[in-house]
Image 1: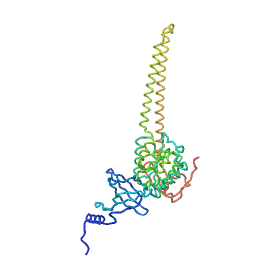
Image 2: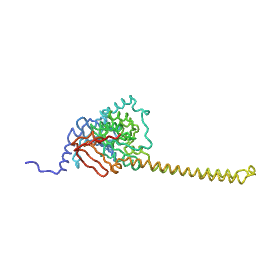
Image 3: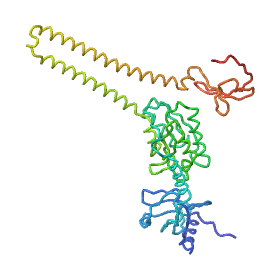
Image 4: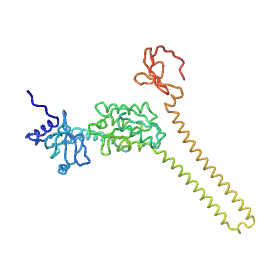
Length: 406
């Protein structure tokens, strides 16, 4: 008959005592590459050591950290000495590190430096190749995961700053083997099929070096370099650097910072217009005051014959000048407001959803491709119909071709 059942806590406690008394596990050195490095507010450090096939969680206390001579970095290959312990509440084990020695830079770090050196020698990082960001973009494409926090931060920041700009979210994978190909293809496609885009923002939130690795791939770097549309790289946190950051036209410390630099603040622009208007009014008042002073300072002896008529003449001219300058100022302000309103109406009228709301619809195949001609239709083909207030599915039962528009 087996032993009496024991509680989970008692089992974990027993395993912990066994590990502490094991002569190997109580004093062991492990070689691996640092991953998921995190400095806690308490001063302790949490990270993983990994190799090609596995990984182990590690804990480095604040006290032991003071004895480590070199700063720890993602991708660094180290030898960590310590003991294996069990966290009884969670039921998992970790390596409690006493000391760390640097063993190498690690494969990812070496690959990063190799590609950085290669692209640098080709001149892809030079400032003369970087494009200026437009002052007032009307459309921005965001190449990132559609479910991550980065895209929400970017959209919220842009909308809070600017009520005019249009945002195109181009969803891609930002992690894993297929991510770099999707990011590269998205940038290429935007340049070919979305030429109304003024700026591209690509990036993701923070993570380990492996999680950010898609933005260190050469295919992504070359797509950014060859893009005719200015690209802002916004990968990870302020301390994270990728190849995309070096090759992009602008590097943002975070996705939120990328949104901040991409668009001007329309509220600030309106305030600036008001300030200019006040300055013009003030300058006009000063000019009029100076003109009146000049009239009052005229020497009466120089105008002895027609003093009254000359003064009246100058006063009439001054009044006309006041009226003309006031009218000119009002006309310029009205014209500026009209231009802003026309721009807003133009942008709103170009909104695809607004067009659909006027009675139009868009027909796409099951892959999402827009049907532009009956030549793309065939009987039995399933299509999707999008209107201003919903979508519908249909199957083509007959095709009637009419005259094409010129």
